[in-house]
Length: 132
Length: 200
Image (cartoon, rainbow over all chains, first blue to last red; front, side):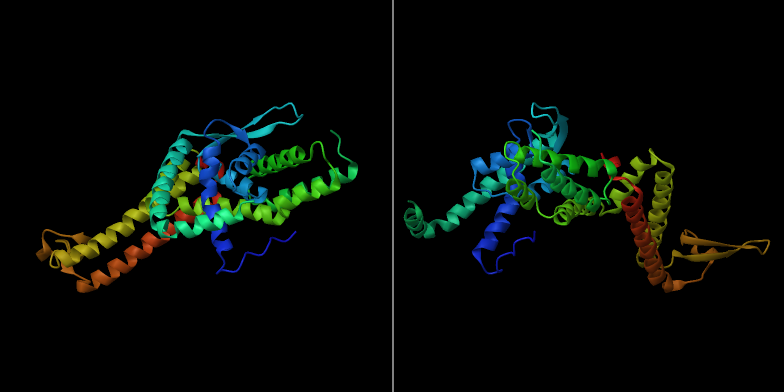
C-alpha cells in the first residue's frame, strides 16, 4: 500500500492538492458548526457537500491535531451499531477559529475573484464545454 | 454483524500494527486512536464485509506505518509550535511545578538561568551606556580583605575595574550562552518528561 506519487511540481494538480489540504481544517470546523459528528460522518459530510476529496488517512490525524489544539473536544458515545463512536464537537476556541478563518477566506476569495475577472470569459466557456 | 475469521484477522493485524507504530505516544492517546480507527473500519464494512471492501477500507487509511507517522507528525508539530519562547518555558514550568517535583526543578533552573543570563547581558549593555560606572569591581577593604562586585557602581573611585572593556564581549557571550542553555534545557525537559496530557 504505497502512497500515490505526488504529481510533478509544475502541474496544476499539485497546486490543487495543496489548496485542498489548506482548506481541510476550515472545512472540518465548518462541518461541526451545527453540532457533534463522528469521524465517518464528518468525512461523508465533506464528500456530500463539496468536492473536497478527503482520504481517511489524512482526516483522522488532522482531527486528532484539532483536538490537541483545543479546537474540538471528543466524547465516546454508545450507538445502536453495537460499538461506541468517538464524536467531535467544537469548543469555544474552535468556534472562534472557524469564524476567523471564514472571514479570512471570504476576504481572500473576494480579492482573488477580482484579480481573476479578466479570465472569466475563457473559464466559463471551458466549464460549459465540460458539462454534459 | 459477524465478520468472517479471515476478515477479523486482517483487521486485527492492521490495528495491532498501528498500535505498535504509535508506541511513542501515551498509552491512553494511542488506545483512543486505535479504538477510533477500529470503529471506522467496522462502520465502513458493516453490511458488506467482503474481503474487497475490507481491503479498500484499509487502503484508504493507508499502511499502518504511514497512518501512524501522520499522527506522530501532527503531535510533533504541535509541540514544536508551542515551545518556542522563554516565556513559554516559564509559563509551562510554573504549571508543571504545581504537578510534580520535576516541574519545580525545571522552573527553578529556568528562573535562575534566565535571570543570570539576562543580568550578564544587561551589565554588558550598561558598559556601553556608562563605561566608567560599570565593571567587575575589586574593592580592598580596610582590613586588607577584598571583595568582588559585578555590575553598576555609584562609586567607581573606590574599586579597581578588573575587566575594563572586556566586560562587554565577555558579558554578552557568557550571558547569551547561559540564556541559550537555559532555553534548551527547558525545552528539552518539557519535551522529554512532560506528558502531553498535562498540557490541558
